[in-house]
Image (cartoon, rainbow, N blue to C red; front, side, top):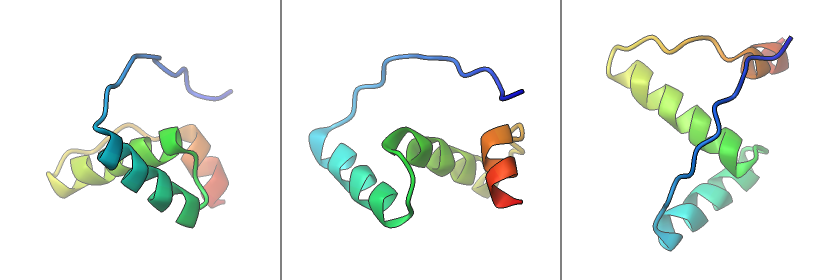
Length: 61
């Protein structure tokens, strides 16, 4: 069963959104998936262990 997702509005500068969208396309992710990936990566860089993302975990197998 996939993890429950918490929907919320996120306002981004148009240029930042475009950059994330380009990176998402290169890495074959949706923009939402790319934002989640970047947030998890940023947390790990700060020494915080984010909860496992079942979608990412199953895709890595």
